[in-house]
Length: 315
Ligand code: SF4
Ligand SMILES: [Zn+2]
Ligand SMILES: [Zn+2]
Image 1 (spheres, protein in one colour):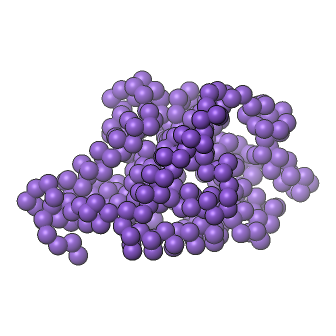
Image 2 (cartoon, rainbow, N blue to C red):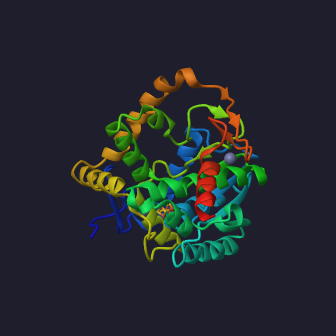
Image 3 (cartoon, rainbow, N blue to C red):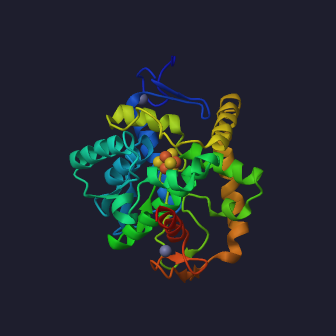
């Protein structure tokens, strides 16, 4: 229960942000939230006038708010398009994407819906069966992520988008920073940020995170106040990310004991990344995958290797 008045007006406060500390009425919270997203986009050069922005839209709260705000704040001078990827996890993603489609229609945002089956000839359920991914903690999501990232990049190019926006939020990023520190994974650590990656890579459309500085709990409140519908019934049945769940619990504990911890962790990345990434700036060229032409380090990209392995197991 929030007590007292809004910091900006005489209305009763409905939300309390202990890290400020701030207290806002509904109207001033919405303004505060939108201003922060605008500020993130400006400070990190995420969206330039005239660019076409493709938003990866899963139907969940984060990508729903990302699409809604990119459209609200930038569509006067930018073209906005949504990409709906169906991993074919029945009873879960199909329902989420139905909500996503309805929102796109209501907001008059053009969208493209693609599926793992049409694009790769397999569903995520089949990937699970063929690879036995569930036996290895965390592996389900990495398989799924590899395939989804490939589609996001391919469709960004197909739809001639300049940037690909994802719904990553402050909680996701703070957890990832801490996980990479605990795993001593400097390579992944420097790739984090509001603009993912270190250097521009030919053939890879830059990925941006407009909600980079927005706590998850505020995204839910924002969606509620703005009447944004999103899928919230159940988690993905393949979500066995035990390790990330531990880091989420640790981070939530730290944030509630020491409000502002997540913002401080982000600020640490902001200070350190330019120093670590200085030598790698510029445009890099990778190899082209011999199977699909997408950029990759070796001869064949990860998604193609994965599909090949599954097809071999099928026959
Ligand atoms: S939770 Fe993991 S397996 Fe499920 S849709 Fe997300 S990335 Fe894919
Ligand atoms: Zn107010
Ligand atoms: Zn490939």
